[in-house]
Amino acid sequence: RKEVEQDPGPFNVPEGATVAFNCTYSNSASQSFFWYRQDCRKEPKLLMSVYSSGNEDGRFTAQLNRASQYISLLIRDSKLSDSATYLCVVNAGNTGKLIFGQGTTLQVKP
Amino acid sequence: SQTIHQWPATLVQPVGSPLSLECTVEGTSNPNLYWYRQAAGRGLQLLFYSVGIGQISSEVPQNLSASRPQDRQFILSSKKLLLSDSGFYLCAWSPARREQFFGPGTRLTVL
Image 1 (cartoon, rainbow over the protein chains, first blue to last red):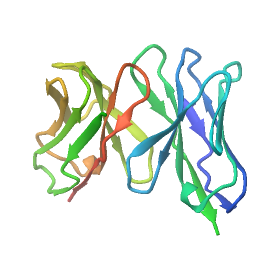
Image 2: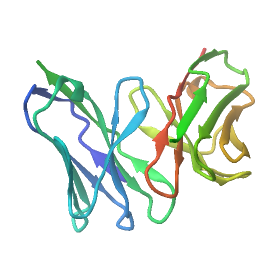
Image 3: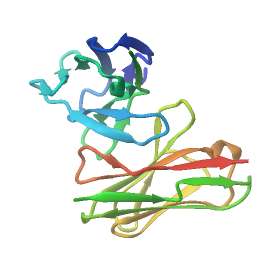
């Protein structure tokens, strides 16, 4: 079983749609959770941290379910510029290492 | 604010040649530093990480090595490149066991 699993997609959605990505992780000792965005041939960039109570940043909402070891990202009112690969990331227990999922590709169409 | 630099941006090298990629961080001290590789269409693979000068942890046995000669400098090296070393090499820094911030990367092609 992979340490962080994501549906690779691609998710093809029209502009304005709401899209949700899911992720599961295997290490119950993980304490920190993040979503990163990676554009084609570019470095990953931190999109948002994920907190236990859930958190929102504009059109983006992240949720964490520790009991199920499940993380989600919801994007509302999709824009063409949201097209990218979204990486689910968890820390490897009490270490400085992060475990990256393979990523979910989103294509927003006009 | 903190910035992270990597060079070169692109590199084409013959099989068997040496490699040296450099990463430097500005605006912070004693960062955790990381080297990753991303093969085409694949996920990120952690190669090395460092919590301080001269302290290197290797994640994957291979023909690569890393060094940290100064607090904010991280170098990835190889004595003899293999075809399988081709990929996108990313350096990242972290303030302390939290989120990581990536440099722009070096795209390496070994022919």
